[in-house]
Image (tube, rainbow, N blue to C red):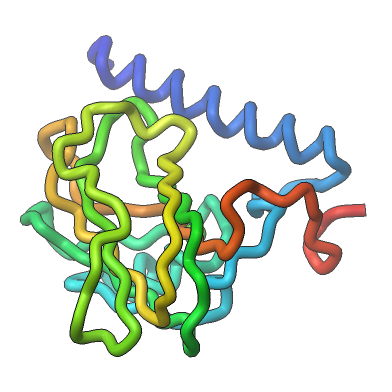
Length: 183
Ligand SMILES: [Ca+2]
């Protein structure tokens, strides 16, 4: 095991332990779901490409940190679009890319019709690490939200997102989902 692989393994293990500890502190068990329910959960998503059904686009909007969308190849750019079913005020988006010890370069755009797009976040030159995730804020009335992955910090990494969460609040709410594994 090379040092870089060892370092990545240790950092990702740390993240799993950290998330597990946080959920045990707030009375949740096993399933590491985000506490706040995003408007994107339960909606539909499509992507430029996927790696089989296991890593489909919808895996990125299920609020489970263990499931992910993975593009079908390492070629960039790749995109993923969420259909929120109706126009809402999009104010915050959390993106959990696969590797916490690397950086990702991306843009997020919004649209009311799926054809005309406006910029919500431009991280096309980002070099900050994806730890624990990226959070972008704004205020855009939109039904469709699209993230385009333009670059990866580690050669050999592709466009792969554990969770893409769209919220209508600027700040995280201190609410827990009662239908999850919380007591
Ligand atoms: Ca997921």
